[in-house]
Image (tube, rainbow, N blue to C red):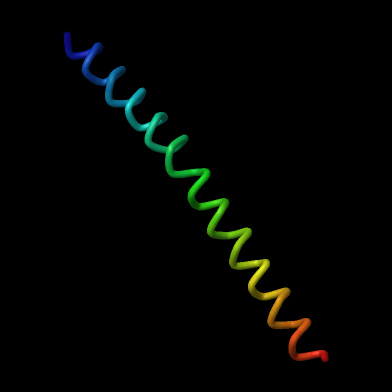
Length: 44
């Protein structure tokens, strides 16, 4: 029973990571795009 609980918690952690990952990568890419945009504005 205890093994099942730990397994489910690990599974929950994996699902949480998968759900958070896209949001983090999206924020990172948008941040990079914003930086690139600012760089272009500054150079002009």
